[in-house]
Length: 315
Ligand code: CP
Ligand code: NVA
Image 1: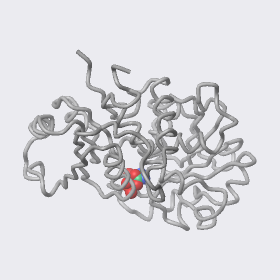
Image 2: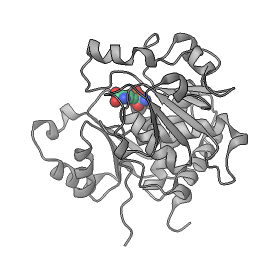
Image 3: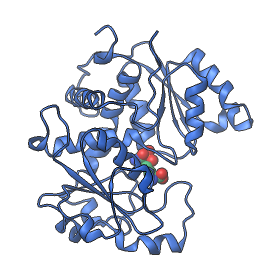
């Protein structure tokens, strides 16, 4: 009997798994499905399957890229709004997991507490994919790694690893920062998180280098990464904005990084806060490619959890 594969934090992926997912994501992207393509040229590896998608927090990129990605792989995406589910009227996560497991083949969920995601995985019998929790955003980071591979093809290890690259995340030590540190490390990426006191990752939970000084923290980095200062669920306080004011990503900070350094941002952006408009819309960023890569990366991740396409047990 095979065990169910989940993607809760991303640490379920070994280095070999993660690099294979990234290779597959490049293949799927090159197959030319999506706007501008005349016809899909990759097989519908999830034909006949259904994937539930539950969003308990707002989303633009994740929702669009998952719904379209599931469709492109030949499966049916089932958008489940929490206010239309009995979950919102007190039905337990346990019973919801049991029902989902009788009808769909995998479920992606964006929610607050990581414990809810863990309960869904423990009580059901189908793969659960984390589409963002308070603690983690693994799908985002797989797309980020894909974008780094595209930006620095000559710097990759023989197996596609990012061992020679250094990313500095600048800003709030949040779910995205935590996932970059965790999942980036699996692919060999060196990660520094630059954040002020009180907004930094817990040193006990991360292998990333931690700094509170933007200038020295980004020195030698090939990529500077920004995310919002106020995440969904955070209190939007003057104190928070004041603490993070010196941690914005602009051209001057890129100048302090390695020559040729690129800017990434998971979006949504607040130009003039965590990133300048010049960087967001300029030629030193790969942010809009990064946003497209969400779809390609998640398609490969769905094939991985569902043991479909090149990840088939029979392959
Ligand atoms: N980056 C990201 O997850 O965007 P959404 O919140 O729009 O899904
Ligand atoms: N840290 C942000 C990421 C949004 C994609 C949040 O959780 O709101």
